[in-house]
Length: 104
Image (cartoon, rainbow, N blue to C red; front, side, top):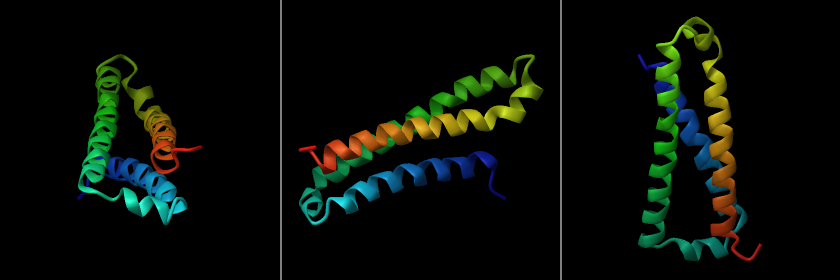
């Protein structure tokens, strides 16, 4: 059985991948020229950094889980995920716009 955290990881990564793929597709056929080994490695680096940012939320979660607000936190911790995912999505959008449509 998958953990709840695992499904959140998947949703987070799917949201960011959808943003990147959307901007890549919108820039076709010009964006096909970007597909080089160095470019793929650069995207991999950005994906790793995005997941490091995702993991930063664990510090907040652990603090809240060990505080006196544990019960209340468990009811509303989905907000941290939602806000974090939205924030990462916005950052990903701006990076995608800059990479796949550099003149605009």
